[in-house]
Amino acid sequence: MNLPDIKEARKRTTNQTEYVYLNQEYDNKLFANQKYFLRTYGCQMNVHDGEEIAARLESLGFTSTDSIEDADVVVLNTCAIRENAHDKLYGFLGRCKHEKEKNNNDLIIAICGCMAQEENVVKDIMEKHPYVDIVFGTHNIHELQDLLINRTKKQNIDVYSCEGKIYENISYKRESDIKAWVNIQYGCDKFCTYCIVPYTRGKQRSRKSAEIIKEVEELVKKGYKEVTLLGQNVNAYGKDLYSDYTLANLLSDVADTGIERLRFVTSHPWDFTDEMVDIIAKRDNIMPYIHLPLQSGSNKILKLMNRRYTKEEYLKLYNQIREKVKDSSITTDIIVGFPGETEEDFEETLSVVNECKFDGAFTFAYSPRENTPAARMEDAILEEVKMDRLHRLNEIINKYSNEANQRLLNKTVKCLVTSLSDKDKNKVCGYTENMKLVNIVGDKSLIGKIVNVKITDAKSFSLDGEYIK
Ligand code: 5AD
Ligand code: SF4
Image (cartoon, rainbow, N blue to C red; front, side, top):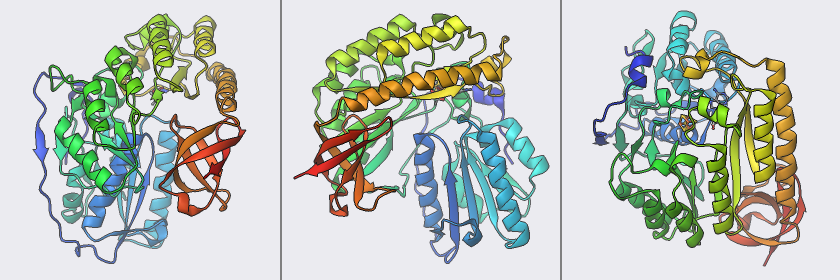
């Protein structure tokens, strides 16, 4: 049994990252005729981990099911950031418990993801949820098969709190055969004071560029049209590994693979260099879409958040991207109600939003994460004040995202068609180069293609369009 340990999770050394080349083979008849139910919450990183988990389960013979009632194993891949994360976990566990007690005594229940890295969550599972069979963390997804094969009747808890290694030769069961996620970096060393990620995902460590390029080349060969490079702070890519190779170099090399669309998330303003902006502007297959979290428009709050930039520096970078990258769209993350945020601080955030006119934003009411520095700060903001600010902020954000969409009205844009539309089977949906969702009149033969679309209607969160031959 290995339990999460916040002190270990916080530790950072100067040790070089260990690169482990996995060579795993399993008998795919071991769990033949058995089914898995996998539920993933949270960010793209977690979604991509979910694709690894699915591949690992299938390597043992499991096939997927959408219903807990049909499942032999249930895996819950949790998120520690998004709102109601705890409610979602316990709500879901309630359903699994019921299923296990009433219908299927042998149901295997496994929990993983960022919440599994939290001391208090694991303690709670041990004390109050004995029916949970397996808990594993973000550092040992590669042990999933062994955990399933070697599990005992007792709770099997194996969570490591460490800086983390990099594992290569991982298989994924990708959700799409058009768009793919590719990890370029794991962990985070920024330690923003509100954020739990540096504790749940270890130190910032970069994959070797050759491995990344090889993975993208293989995806191109398989016919993938779009790749999104993934990391908590992609602009710091390479800093821990190379002296003169940065995200700018990586973007250029990955663009050379010929992938039709290249994206990257998430950016941190602190590490965003001029070279990076230039390469995004220069290369046609690097998409003009940047997610650039602001978090707050008040320098006082940015400092308390340990964001390492001022409002002025953010605006300078923002304007530089807008000027250089043609038809770019920029989205952001904003937290309201951080401890000590006064009405004036909040109004400074609104003023930056009014200046930037973001294409869209994820907005959050601050909520404390156990063991983070902000959780110990005084001057907590009343819930009703947070909600009022969130509401006021969202109104402005929606206004600008609507305006950004309106600007596309009657224009013809390139869309990568990804699927049938959920709502209308006579339509398909796709994304513009700058990441706007478009519902397109057209049939399923368009799926997987990059096509010209004339925009016929614009709403706050999506566009309507017609396929132009
Ligand atoms: N409270 C509210 N929002 C948070 N985020 C991260 N931690 C917290 C927290 N404790 C938001 C940030 C981040 C996004 C992924 O989640 O805006 O960019
Ligand atoms: Fe969290 Fe800040 Fe790292 Fe982003 S950069 S993952 S907000 S600590």
